[in-house]
Image (cartoon, rainbow, N blue to C red; front, side):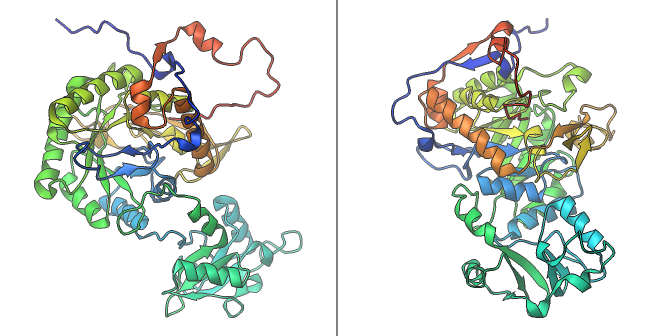
Length: 506
């Protein structure tokens, strides 16, 4: 006879946190959001990787590339660069993150002398950059011949067909720095010469990087940066259960810090085989998360197979239609609560703490706090990060509003059949488990993450907690009725401004 669960499958929106005692010490500036990413033995050792904030970006084409990875690592999180691409392309993205020098920017808006003012305007509008190096071939590392800034042209007085060579600031009128210049020295040059940017060139005069005045203050204001022992940004990558023997070595060679098996359902031999292969070839030196699971049995299976962290959630993502298509899954809150209990039991038995990642089902910012209170150590977000400038998708105008494209890894557009692979010889997506969509454009990652974390910290203070473990210990949660949900928002009034006041998440 089938097993029936007594309790219904619940979502985060069906719960509220009941406030606890807030002392004078419970203020947002005292809150620490540091949280383990990888398993460890509390009291014996520290985690190999600890996040500065409890947020990682999803293993998705529409979310996590090298640009997103750098932006999120700057704020204290980690991106998992999508694996539904060639091994070479994914490894190259990882390498670009590891090679990125904080403060030294590889230009992605480059001109050649034969390009026109129309090209300048198009690049400016598309990428948002006002400073554009001019190289002999228009590449990021070509021989530097000049630079174009907003001071070099006036659209009201110039023809769009005018050549870049005719209005750029030429190299002989520029201040440049040699390849060996340190960041401190570069900033001194910028300050002494009242520059907004400083090109760094090699011995042959080829452009290497740009250093911007604005980045100096930005770097100083990011104390939570995720840096490895060589002061490089940390980055993760997704792998599948098919080509791991070829993909993992390439990613490790590129410098990846942590891997994650990207699968819609993780309670399978295929994940066990993948974990075992990594352990056989790399021991514990390569960190690998696994999932996704929604119950205690799934957690125990992956923990015993050697996962460094375990993802929780099936069918809860905003672009996921697995539940509709296959009838499997579980409400994200119920899944998180049960798996967290299993994790705590496993810790009592073994002394090993396996962090949990809540993946999916997060609609509003406060759902992140609920996920943490229910036992998650961090959350994986797709839709949340897809809205930002740093996501790899196009910004488009839809009915007068700016949107960003966002599609699921189970959609035909992603063609990521490996994520839904159930073994055997057959390869390919038989049916879709994700949709292709738009999400409202929200601007830069930094500003939005700051608002989200301010809400999380404020709620933690209301619960009498200044660390995530303390929140998990002290949290009091109550199930709410459908009427309570309505009562919780603005009601029985006529709103003057119908714009949203809550930042959406995954």
